[in-house]
Image (tube, rainbow, N blue to C red):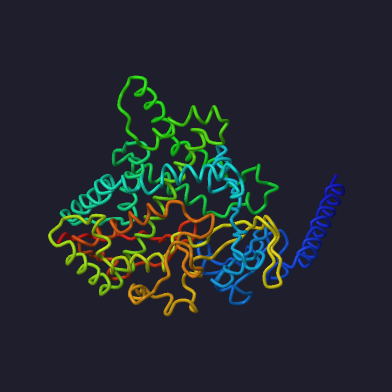
Amino acid sequence: MASFILEGLGWLVVGLFSLYIFQLIRDSRRRLPPGPWPSKPIIGDLLDLGEPGQQHRTFQKLSERYGDLMCLRFGSVPHVIVSSPEALREVFHAGENGKKVDNIAGIPSLDVLTAWGHDSHTIFALPSLDDKWRAVRKFAAAEMLAPRRIAGAGAMMQARIVESLYRYLSDHAARGTTVAIRNAVMDPILSLLLGLLYSIDLEPKERAMFRDTIEEIVEILGTGNVSDMFPAIAPLDLEGLRRRTKTLLGIVYHPFDEQVVLRRRSREAGEPRKNDVLDTVLDKESEWEKEGSLLSPEVIRVLLSDIYGAGGSSTAALMEWGMVDLIQNPETMHKAKEELKRVLGDKPFIEESDVAKLPYLQAVIKEMLRLRVALPLMPRKTEADIEVNGYRIPKNTNVLVNAWAINRNAQAWPDPHKFIPERFLDGETRSHVGQDFDMIPFGLGRRICPGMPLAMKMIPLILGTLLHRFDWELPAEVKESGIDMKEKCGVVLTLVTPLKAIPREI
């Protein structure tokens, strides 16, 4: 029996070694971009990723050795890393005659998103060439994030973000207690989104639980999962991440499921419409059924759930980083506060109409978007074979766009790692809308963030509220040791130690 087991293990070793040699030969013939060679058996280049949570910095350092277009193998799955504006431009334009074809508009599949069949409906997993992706994206653009919908949200934005955040900060200022900036920002954002979508809000404790659920999902999405590195064993869910995600998604789906039932009852009772997104979904339900549409309430439930995570977590993380930079650059904060004082005068709250009169605040926001891109590593997948610089990137290859490195490219930006809002005041025309390859805070091409217009409405109001009527002081222990700047790279780039500060009402 023992000899049989030893013989079996021997053949297993021979088989694995043969597969490894075959992989090396195949990779050399595929003309992939350069990277560590040879990759290690089974684990690939995982040991080259360095310290956990620092992949964005590790990739930038590796690009200095292997080039701004390089290939790393995570387990059995190759990934091409794009680390400079020029490399991104070349990959993006890799069509005939340099035409903008966006052949990296696909997106890698994540095992955790198969929970509840989420991946079958979400715009963050469907191929961009898929008819359902187009239909979902069109619905989002026309019914949820359309200019008319965002413009009509002005009063709600003022009440649920500006005034709500002000009251929260004022209460802490009166008691002299610290504020966790990220949570303080994310809660009113979720309140706004729930209002726009369902005309509801949650009690503070419920909203905090909802926020924590979303944050855990975002953290799981950014966690290296053995199921994604070795797809052959994905059904085993060895780390239990898919099972945990299924539980969390059930919580996130709940507001939609509950409100659909309640809204149908209210319609049967003849109650007036609320004219929110949920009303639009129910209006179109019978139309979708008759036409055999790719859309359905179940599909839209996934879309709305994605909006919570993408809209809340990334914006809150960006604002936390912005406050870190302003606190550490008191002269810049003083300039922003003086501008707010000059424009707003005795007004207690900033309003949307004020933003156009605040060029320095807008420059601060642009510098936040450049320096503190919320999604540091943008996942993509090739949707066609790409030939670039003598290399070949086959169709269906995973691509990671290192937006963190691209936005800090030294050839594009003087003093790229410094927080200098003034760079956007002196004729700098580069913008955040994905047209410039050296500033891509919201991505670019077909996968550009659909929530960008709403985010750019919220951010000035949030930052203006944080600065207009409040000075900020660090807790004594943080003053002594300094802000802990250690960061964690997942889907969203966050501080390992959340920023907490004490507001002092002026």
